[in-house]
Image (cartoon, rainbow, N blue to C red; front, side):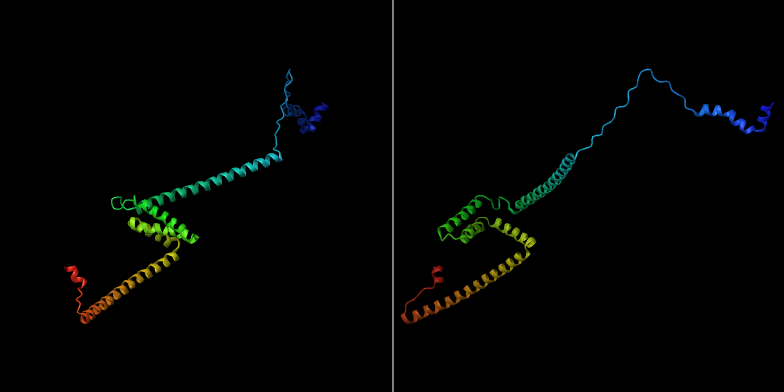
Length: 228
């Protein structure tokens, strides 16, 4: 009776003490049964770290590989440009050549080569100065090309002038002025020669008249002889 009265006096404490075994039973983990045979412990994993030498070799290899890749790309770009230039030059040279039935390249090119070689031989036979050895072969070859391959020479000259206008405009202007002066000089020389020839014909006519008047010798004119 005393115990019952004690429980009635403190019911909350009694309920807490009565529920303690249940809470302990729920909170405590259950023990597993131990295995009969011993289990193997996990093997340790060893992570190898590269040494300083290996890091240096790896970095050097990466640098060399990247440099090789960049260099190969540049070389390929240069090769592509060179191939493009070759195709452009080849097509341009084909366009410079006139039709074979109009002016065949051979044997005119052979005669041009012989003329250039002859110029080199002449330069050696004369006083063999460096300037003559440099100038004589191309000059003789150019003269022969103007005679044997006039159409080729004109086309090549126009192409060279176009290149000069594109890359060396000052030189092209100087050549244009020089060509104009040469044309003017040639025209003036022809006019001077024509005037000189006219004056010479007048003097020759006066001389004939003087001879005929003083000697009585009849001198036939060249025009009359050609008519006969």
